[in-house]
Length: 58
Length: 465
Image 1 (tube, rainbow over the protein chains, first blue to last red):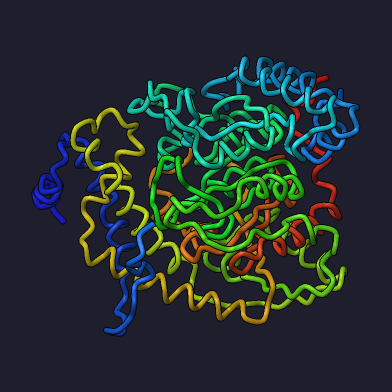
Image 2 (image 1 turned 120 degrees about the horizontal axis):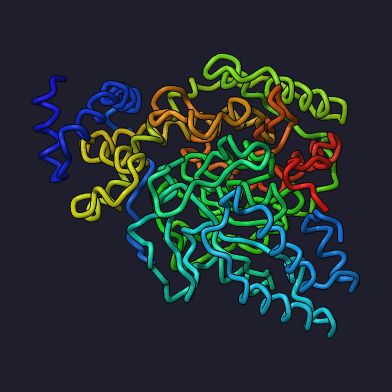
């Protein structure tokens, strides 16, 4: 991802970062994205999440 | 007085009226004065409170009304546990002057058990961002070598227990924050089953991964501490409504008859450990076999498959907790934490949901892998502690950690010292149990620990008389 595109997606979060702070995050972004990809492999359509809504609130 | 006492030893002496809780507390306060200028394990020493607690315990000792094995025992709390009227900072500028109105549930339970509150202990900022040198307080140092890392995030508890400044303390564990410092500081520390011990009143990091738990010098002491913190809390939505087991009941049964699975792939292939760590594991397996346990290898998905959804979930949930402050006070966080948290803003909703779906599949895989064993053995850290100035900011992305798989699956996991490496610092093993089978985990850990003799050695800097 190029610097301008990364800057845009950071700005979309609403965080106010300096260019130097954005550059630090951009340097680690490929590792972060690789981890996200590994965490989210294709799953059967009916696969449930581990967090399930409970109607009885306590 | 002996320079070091375990909780079990001290409570036995107090029950026999051979040790004054006030004398023990003064002894620990004196050790704090002598050592903590180097270790930085305390953010706040509550000397007046400690002495008041100790005098109350001494009164109960004299009248034969002791509350149990924690009565009169000096302890400390990680500084993300709320303490009524006592500053609770998360080691952060954002909460530098925060004084909670109420105790967290665990703090209240230990106080009710008679424990002596020595103070609040250092943490990585908000239990995620360390070691940091740009916070209002310095990071805790490892007593085995103060140039080295304690691991975290329960860094102060690791340092203070190892150096004998307190006899036990609280940690919290979202991706390994109890077991990491227990491993690198040479302690016993357990992340119990998710939901066994209340999180209420503990500053959250990631609600579906956060656990509270104890750290101490021995497995036996951890069992005593966990006994006093476990139990159903109707106001903690994650709390398990079930009876609490007697965690000390099986301690002396030994390993005979236990079925032990070895997660060898984690420490041989996925993140190869140091020679000393590997030797420690092999020695443990030999010991268990010699005691009559059945040992076999167990295989699951690669360790990174467990780490990746863990970190996606953690980052997303932590970002949700911190977003208002991140938007308004980004630069009041330390650099490490703010940079790690900022990635949470880049996750898509579907990433979080998919990670939670993957999590359930991995929980099922681990359950199946444990169907025919009682506990799993693997490493709890790669090796000895690195220098504190050489800890990578993005370590969690670079290599899979040994602890996160059991936050993701919620299983009880205990780190136990398994010797010392080439640099003279501790190495460790990790013992993992089935849900709510802490007593079995403690049984295996105690059998190993008492047979090996590693508990006779303390950090050199702390061994003055």
